Image (cartoon, rainbow, N blue to C red; front, top):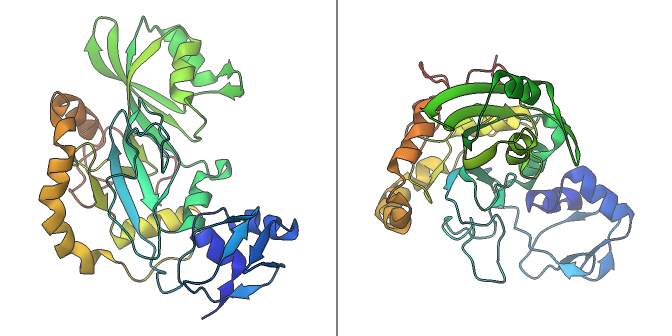
Length: 317
Protein backbone atom coordinates (compact mmCIF):
# COMPACT_ATOMS: atom_id res chain seq x y z
CA UNK A 1 0.00 0.00 0.00
CA UNK A 2 1.44 3.37 -1.02
CA UNK A 3 1.82 6.28 1.41
CA UNK A 4 2.82 9.90 1.04
CA UNK A 5 6.58 10.31 1.01
CA UNK A 6 6.59 12.83 3.85
CA UNK A 7 4.60 10.42 6.04
CA UNK A 8 7.05 7.58 5.38
CA UNK A 9 10.04 9.76 6.28
CA UNK A 10 8.33 11.24 9.34
CA UNK A 11 7.41 7.80 10.66
CA UNK A 12 11.07 6.80 10.27
CA UNK A 13 12.11 9.73 12.46
CA UNK A 14 13.65 12.07 9.87
CA UNK A 15 11.59 15.11 10.87
CA UNK A 16 7.99 16.25 11.14
CA UNK A 17 5.78 16.05 8.06
CA UNK A 18 5.93 19.81 7.70
CA UNK A 19 9.72 19.83 7.88
CA UNK A 20 9.98 17.05 5.29
CA UNK A 21 7.55 18.84 2.98
CA UNK A 22 9.91 21.82 3.10
CA UNK A 23 12.86 19.53 2.26
CA UNK A 24 10.97 18.12 -0.73
CA UNK A 25 10.13 21.63 -1.99
CA UNK A 26 13.82 22.56 -1.69
CA UNK A 27 14.82 19.58 -3.86
CA UNK A 28 16.69 17.81 -1.07
CA UNK A 29 14.87 14.44 -1.32
CA UNK A 30 15.12 11.78 -4.01
CA UNK A 31 13.59 8.32 -4.46
CA UNK A 32 15.59 5.73 -6.38
CA UNK A 33 17.63 8.47 -8.02
CA UNK A 34 14.65 10.61 -9.06
CA UNK A 35 14.08 14.01 -7.45
CA UNK A 36 10.93 13.90 -5.31
CA UNK A 37 8.06 16.35 -5.67
CA UNK A 38 5.41 17.29 -3.15
CA UNK A 39 2.52 14.81 -3.31
CA UNK A 40 4.63 11.82 -4.33
CA UNK A 41 3.48 8.50 -2.92
CA UNK A 42 5.74 5.51 -2.37
CA UNK A 43 5.34 1.86 -1.53
CA UNK A 44 8.30 0.97 0.65
CA UNK A 45 10.31 -2.09 -0.39
CA UNK A 46 13.66 -3.42 0.85
CA UNK A 47 15.31 -2.34 -2.44
CA UNK A 48 14.05 1.25 -2.31
CA UNK A 49 16.63 3.98 -1.73
CA UNK A 50 15.44 7.31 -0.40
CA UNK A 51 18.09 10.01 -0.10
CA UNK A 52 18.03 13.25 1.88
CA UNK A 53 20.79 15.72 0.96
CA UNK A 54 22.43 12.94 -1.06
CA UNK A 55 22.60 10.46 1.81
CA UNK A 56 20.58 7.22 1.93
CA UNK A 57 18.25 7.27 4.94
CA UNK A 58 16.78 4.31 6.76
CA UNK A 59 13.07 3.69 6.25
CA UNK A 60 10.63 1.05 7.34
CA UNK A 61 8.04 -0.94 5.44
CA UNK A 62 4.46 0.15 6.06
CA UNK A 63 3.59 -3.19 7.66
CA UNK A 64 5.29 -1.96 10.87
CA UNK A 65 2.71 0.70 11.62
CA UNK A 66 1.91 0.14 15.28
CA UNK A 67 3.11 3.01 17.46
CA UNK A 68 5.28 1.75 20.31
CA UNK A 69 6.76 3.71 23.22
CA UNK A 70 9.41 2.70 25.75
CA UNK A 71 10.18 4.29 29.12
CA UNK A 72 13.93 3.98 29.68
CA UNK A 73 15.81 4.71 32.91
CA UNK A 74 18.92 6.39 31.55
CA UNK A 75 21.96 6.01 33.80
CA UNK A 76 24.64 8.65 34.14
CA UNK A 77 27.49 8.12 31.69
CA UNK A 78 25.39 7.22 28.63
CA UNK A 79 25.23 9.45 25.56
CA UNK A 80 22.01 10.30 23.72
CA UNK A 81 23.38 9.33 20.32
CA UNK A 82 23.21 6.20 18.19
CA UNK A 83 26.97 5.82 17.85
CA UNK A 84 29.91 7.39 19.61
CA UNK A 85 33.26 7.62 17.77
CA UNK A 86 35.05 7.08 21.08
CA UNK A 87 33.12 3.90 21.81
CA UNK A 88 31.35 5.22 24.90
CA UNK A 89 27.99 3.63 25.89
CA UNK A 90 24.83 5.12 24.39
CA UNK A 91 21.17 5.04 25.37
CA UNK A 92 20.42 2.82 22.35
CA UNK A 93 22.73 -0.02 23.40
CA UNK A 94 20.25 -1.76 25.73
CA UNK A 95 17.00 -1.24 23.81
CA UNK A 96 15.17 -4.23 22.31
CA UNK A 97 15.99 -4.91 18.66
CA UNK A 98 13.41 -4.10 15.98
CA UNK A 99 12.85 -5.37 12.46
CA UNK A 100 11.97 -2.85 9.77
CA UNK A 101 11.80 0.01 12.26
CA UNK A 102 13.94 1.85 14.78
CA UNK A 103 13.69 3.52 18.16
CA UNK A 104 13.64 7.32 18.14
CA UNK A 105 14.55 9.23 21.30
CA UNK A 106 12.05 11.85 22.48
CA UNK A 107 14.52 14.59 23.38
CA UNK A 108 17.85 14.18 25.13
CA UNK A 109 19.47 14.04 28.56
CA UNK A 110 23.09 15.08 28.94
CA UNK A 111 25.76 12.54 29.86
CA UNK A 112 25.69 13.42 33.57
CA UNK A 113 21.88 13.36 33.87
CA UNK A 114 19.88 10.21 34.62
CA UNK A 115 16.18 9.37 34.65
CA UNK A 116 13.20 8.99 32.36
CA UNK A 117 13.83 9.04 28.62
CA UNK A 118 11.08 8.04 26.18
CA UNK A 119 11.64 6.21 22.90
CA UNK A 120 9.07 5.61 20.15
CA UNK A 121 8.83 3.99 16.73
CA UNK A 122 6.67 6.89 15.49
CA UNK A 123 8.80 9.73 14.16
CA UNK A 124 5.87 12.13 13.88
CA UNK A 125 4.99 11.57 17.54
CA UNK A 126 8.61 12.14 18.60
CA UNK A 127 8.97 15.34 16.61
CA UNK A 128 5.71 16.82 17.86
CA UNK A 129 6.52 16.03 21.49
CA UNK A 130 9.93 17.70 21.13
CA UNK A 131 8.58 20.87 19.49
CA UNK A 132 8.76 23.84 21.92
CA UNK A 133 5.21 24.95 21.05
CA UNK A 134 3.79 21.83 22.77
CA UNK A 135 5.16 22.87 26.19
CA UNK A 136 5.13 19.33 27.57
CA UNK A 137 6.01 19.51 31.25
CA UNK A 138 9.18 17.78 32.50
CA UNK A 139 9.96 17.27 36.17
CA UNK A 140 13.43 16.78 37.65
CA UNK A 141 14.77 15.80 41.06
CA UNK A 142 17.81 18.00 41.67
CA UNK A 143 20.46 17.78 44.37
CA UNK A 144 22.16 21.15 44.70
CA UNK A 145 25.33 22.24 46.46
CA UNK A 146 25.28 25.76 47.85
CA UNK A 147 23.23 28.18 49.88
CA UNK A 148 19.64 28.51 48.64
CA UNK A 149 17.56 31.32 50.12
CA UNK A 150 14.12 32.76 49.38
CA UNK A 151 15.56 35.40 47.03
CA UNK A 152 17.22 32.77 44.84
CA UNK A 153 13.99 30.77 44.70
CA UNK A 154 12.13 33.95 43.62
CA UNK A 155 14.70 34.60 40.89
CA UNK A 156 14.41 31.06 39.55
CA UNK A 157 10.60 31.31 39.54
CA UNK A 158 10.39 34.78 37.96
CA UNK A 159 13.14 34.14 35.43
CA UNK A 160 16.84 34.72 34.90
CA UNK A 161 18.74 35.68 31.76
CA UNK A 162 20.72 32.86 30.15
CA UNK A 163 22.98 33.17 27.10
CA UNK A 164 20.19 31.84 24.86
CA UNK A 165 17.40 33.92 26.39
CA UNK A 166 15.34 34.21 29.58
CA UNK A 167 14.34 31.05 31.43
CA UNK A 168 12.58 30.04 34.64
CA UNK A 169 11.21 27.06 36.53
CA UNK A 170 7.46 26.59 36.42
CA UNK A 171 7.49 25.13 39.94
CA UNK A 172 10.15 24.60 42.63
CA UNK A 173 9.53 22.45 45.71
CA UNK A 174 11.95 21.63 48.52
CA UNK A 175 12.28 17.88 49.16
CA UNK A 176 14.81 17.68 52.00
CA UNK A 177 18.51 17.35 52.61
CA UNK A 178 21.26 18.20 55.06
CA UNK A 179 23.47 21.28 55.26
CA UNK A 180 24.27 22.75 51.86
CA UNK A 181 23.34 19.52 50.03
CA UNK A 182 19.61 19.76 49.40
CA UNK A 183 17.06 18.14 47.09
CA UNK A 184 14.48 20.08 45.08
CA UNK A 185 11.91 19.07 42.50
CA UNK A 186 11.60 21.50 39.60
CA UNK A 187 9.44 21.59 36.48
CA UNK A 188 10.00 23.05 33.00
CA UNK A 189 7.92 23.14 29.83
CA UNK A 190 10.84 23.25 27.40
CA UNK A 191 14.00 21.25 26.81
CA UNK A 192 16.88 23.60 26.11
CA UNK A 193 20.40 22.22 26.43
CA UNK A 194 21.44 21.82 30.12
CA UNK A 195 18.71 24.27 31.09
CA UNK A 196 18.16 22.98 34.64
CA UNK A 197 21.86 23.12 35.45
CA UNK A 198 22.32 26.55 33.86
CA UNK A 199 19.39 28.03 35.77
CA UNK A 200 20.84 26.98 39.12
CA UNK A 201 24.32 28.13 38.10
CA UNK A 202 22.88 31.55 37.22
CA UNK A 203 22.07 32.09 40.92
CA UNK A 204 25.41 30.72 42.14
CA UNK A 205 24.33 27.17 43.00
CA UNK A 206 25.88 23.98 41.58
CA UNK A 207 23.89 20.90 40.60
CA UNK A 208 25.49 17.68 41.88
CA UNK A 209 22.74 15.21 40.84
CA UNK A 210 19.99 15.55 38.24
CA UNK A 211 17.28 12.97 37.60
CA UNK A 212 14.27 13.36 35.32
CA UNK A 213 11.34 11.83 37.20
CA UNK A 214 8.37 12.73 34.99
CA UNK A 215 7.48 13.58 31.39
CA UNK A 216 4.00 15.04 31.01
CA UNK A 217 1.86 12.85 33.28
CA UNK A 218 4.15 9.84 32.90
CA UNK A 219 6.42 9.17 35.90
CA UNK A 220 9.64 7.19 35.96
CA UNK A 221 8.24 3.68 36.62
CA UNK A 222 8.80 2.55 40.20
CA UNK A 223 11.18 -0.39 40.48
CA UNK A 224 12.68 0.09 37.02
CA UNK A 225 16.48 -0.32 37.39
CA UNK A 226 18.91 2.10 35.84
CA UNK A 227 19.58 0.90 32.29
CA UNK A 228 16.21 -0.89 32.20
CA UNK A 229 13.19 -0.24 29.99
CA UNK A 230 9.44 -0.83 30.14
CA UNK A 231 7.06 -0.73 27.18
CA UNK A 232 4.07 1.55 27.71
CA UNK A 233 0.50 0.25 27.43
CA UNK A 234 -1.99 1.58 24.90
CA UNK A 235 -3.66 4.12 27.22
CA UNK A 236 -0.32 5.80 27.95
CA UNK A 237 0.62 5.85 24.26
CA UNK A 238 -2.69 7.50 23.43
CA UNK A 239 -2.19 10.02 26.23
CA UNK A 240 1.02 11.15 24.49
CA UNK A 241 -0.68 11.18 21.09
CA UNK A 242 -3.55 13.29 22.41
CA UNK A 243 -1.06 15.79 23.85
CA UNK A 244 0.20 16.53 20.33
CA UNK A 245 -3.10 16.13 18.46
CA UNK A 246 -2.41 12.80 16.78
CA UNK A 247 -5.11 10.19 16.24
CA UNK A 248 -5.39 7.52 18.92
CA UNK A 249 -3.99 4.04 18.31
CA UNK A 250 -6.36 1.09 18.53
CA UNK A 251 -3.85 -1.76 18.77
CA UNK A 252 -0.70 -2.36 20.77
CA UNK A 253 2.32 -4.64 20.46
CA UNK A 254 2.45 -4.97 24.24
CA UNK A 255 0.09 -7.97 24.80
CA UNK A 256 1.71 -10.21 22.18
CA UNK A 257 5.21 -9.37 23.38
CA UNK A 258 4.58 -9.62 27.12
CA UNK A 259 5.78 -13.22 27.33
CA UNK A 260 8.93 -12.41 25.37
CA UNK A 261 9.69 -9.53 27.72
CA UNK A 262 9.23 -11.78 30.77
CA UNK A 263 11.84 -14.13 29.32
CA UNK A 264 14.22 -11.22 28.83
CA UNK A 265 13.73 -9.82 32.35
CA UNK A 266 16.73 -11.65 33.78
CA UNK A 267 18.90 -10.51 30.87
CA UNK A 268 17.88 -6.90 31.52
CA UNK A 269 18.64 -7.24 35.24
CA UNK A 270 22.09 -8.60 34.47
CA UNK A 271 22.72 -5.84 31.96
CA UNK A 272 21.95 -3.12 34.51
CA UNK A 273 23.52 -4.80 37.56
CA UNK A 274 26.60 -2.62 37.49
CA UNK A 275 24.39 0.46 37.84
CA UNK A 276 22.63 -0.92 40.91
CA UNK A 277 25.52 -0.77 43.36
CA UNK A 278 25.54 2.40 45.38
CA UNK A 279 22.53 3.76 43.54
CA UNK A 280 19.60 2.13 45.28
CA UNK A 281 18.93 5.05 47.63
CA UNK A 282 19.20 7.64 44.87
CA UNK A 283 16.95 5.63 42.59
CA UNK A 284 14.34 5.21 45.33
CA UNK A 285 14.16 8.94 46.12
CA UNK A 286 12.69 10.13 42.82
CA UNK A 287 10.29 7.19 42.69
CA UNK A 288 8.85 8.17 46.07
CA UNK A 289 8.39 11.68 44.73
CA UNK A 290 6.92 10.60 41.41
CA UNK A 291 4.26 8.19 42.65
CA UNK A 292 3.87 4.43 42.38
CA UNK A 293 3.83 3.36 38.76
CA UNK A 294 3.78 -0.39 38.20
CA UNK A 295 6.91 -2.00 36.75
CA UNK A 296 6.33 -2.40 33.02
CA UNK A 297 3.50 0.15 32.97
CA UNK A 298 2.88 3.73 33.99
CA UNK A 299 -0.87 3.61 34.18
CA UNK A 300 -0.98 4.78 37.82
CA UNK A 301 -0.14 8.41 37.03
CA UNK A 302 -2.84 9.68 39.35
CA UNK A 303 -1.87 7.57 42.39
CA UNK A 304 -2.47 9.24 45.75
CA UNK A 305 0.57 10.62 47.50
CA UNK A 306 2.39 11.47 44.27
CA UNK A 307 4.36 14.55 45.27
CA UNK A 308 6.00 14.92 41.90
CA UNK A 309 2.82 15.67 39.98
CA UNK A 310 1.90 18.77 41.94
CA UNK A 311 1.36 21.14 39.06
CA UNK A 312 -1.63 21.25 36.76
CA UNK A 313 0.15 21.66 33.47
CA UNK A 314 -0.36 18.95 30.85
CA UNK A 315 -2.84 17.03 33.00
CA UNK A 316 -5.69 15.09 31.53
CA UNK A 317 -9.05 16.68 32.18
